[in-house]
Image (tube, rainbow, N blue to C red; front, side, top):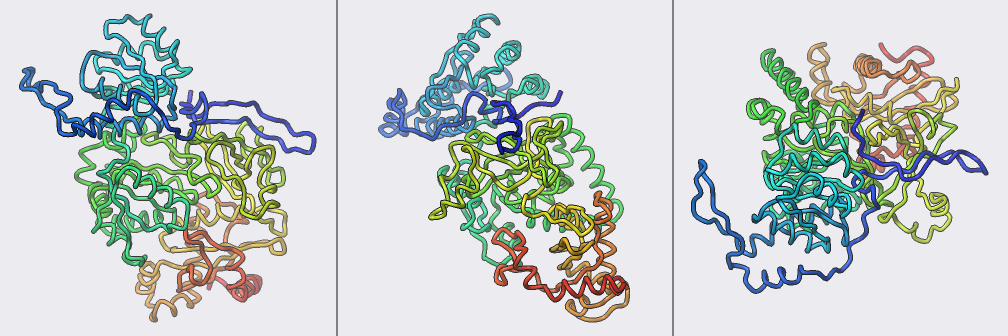
Amino acid sequence: MAEMFTVKVEEATPAGGGRLAAGPVYRSVYAKDGLMELPQDIQSPWDFFSGAVKKYPKNMMLGQRQVTDGKAGEYVWQTYEEVYQKVMRIGSAIRSFSVNPGAHCGIYGSNCPEWVMAMQACNSQGICYVPLYDTLGANAVEFIMDHAEISIAFVQESKIKSILAVVPKCTAHLRAIVSFGDFTSEMKKEAEKFGVSCFSWEDFSSMITEEDSYFSYLPLAHIFDQVIENYCISKGASIGFWQGDIRYLMEDVQVMKPTIFCGVPRVYDRIYTGINLKIESGGMLAKHLFQYAYNYKLANMRKGLKQHEASPFFDKIVFSKIKEGLGGRIRLMIAGAAPLAGQIEEFLRVTSCSVFVQGYGLTESCAGCFTSIANVVSMIGTVGPPVTTIEARLESVPEMGYDALSETPRGEICLRGHTLFSGYYKRPSLTEEVFSDGWFHTGDIGEWQPNGAMKIIDRKKNIFKLSQGEYVAVEVVESAYMQSPLVASVWVYGNSFESFLVAVVVPERQALEEWAATNNKAGDFAELCNDPKARGYIQDELNKTGKKLGLRGFEMLKAVHLEPVPFSIEKDLITPTFKLKRPQLLKYYKDRVDQMYNDAKDGRTAL
């Protein structure tokens, strides 16, 4: 049975009364007892500790003897300020699981610094901590965990087995177990079978911290980067800015050496293509070594090992070169703004030596409303379950053949929750258009996966019908063609008056120049783009890629125009996050489009 990352909170609604059928309402498994409430001012015993930190920051607070080779040495002390910093990180991690003020966390173990820090972390968030004596038996532990509705259990390493024994009967409320020490992979698998996440003390406390640094290059006018940067600021992290020139993007990354990198598919496509070109040029032995290392690490990740546990040896001798290309310190990579191809996500999860997650959101949802879960391989190709402030359901789109009540539910993604906008400024009619019965209609088409993750498969408005009646989901088609190493950008066009597709393609300069050298073609890049044989070569290679990735016959290209100048924001052809602006592209290339259709009909395209 697949591990589930969502829970159903409302049943499906059949069509009727002029309403479309809608699938069940789902939440993230980490929000199964309710969506995360917005932060509120709290008063609790926290005042005692926080006041002492201000008065006595350098005083020794918690001490423990250091044990080496079974022998206890001198006491090692932590100051009030040092403890405070750790407590704040733990408190932040608790809240990230949607454990709100008034909720309950358990602390199970003997006296130690971690016990006190877990207690103070609960106090810092207005959360009630429930002590469990370390001498309690299994029945007593089960009763307290269930009766007190424990959301997160902080547990001494020697007590992990005792907690795991009662997890099957405590899943109604239990979301995570945090060990004072570490977890074995077997113990983690045992808990995760029941939807309970497991963390070592270090992992749980090492979300984004003041030691992190973020590389800022995505447009700040876009909600994605605004939210990420505000979160980094809230954690005291560093933010470094790029020069503003895409040509020097990777150079900026290597100089700054960030720990957090956010990107859109267009950027990750380029990174993926660049790495693969280097692998291909590295010789047969290097290619075989890379592929062996890749397969070995991926197999271990599929067994449940975290990316850093799956193959430390190959990380060091093979994949470290890729990490160095990203500055050498990357530990978290996030993809957003548009769906990322599954093979690219898998590749970066395996090779980047960092945690890689993909999310989905809109300006209307304050950025992220779905986020995939780190180190869960079944999340690849999806945007994960809903975040803890959002509920989601699918609504059928009959004209596109999407049924929210089918065995594989597909339909328009609809949202409601605490972090949605209230409406469009001075646009009441538009607000009414996107809201229905309290549900915000995103315009994006999703598909629920067996594990409760969402997969973005289409865009409601980016679909057209060809003259023979076939529907084309153009973003899916473009995503397939973008997998070709010959392509930097591609815009695919069709309409209901024509029976086939054409495309404007910006080729990769190096790839086209290498083809020209092999085929004794002279001229600069613009002249090569105008060469009929070059057009034929690119068209044939794109169709081979499309066929390999499962595109159907009517989705193949019958003509292409090679554009030497990249699509740009200045020409109003793309958005700041590199999404295509289709009406503007059609207006700009109208003459070329008409010529491609005429040439294709006359058989004058691939020479």
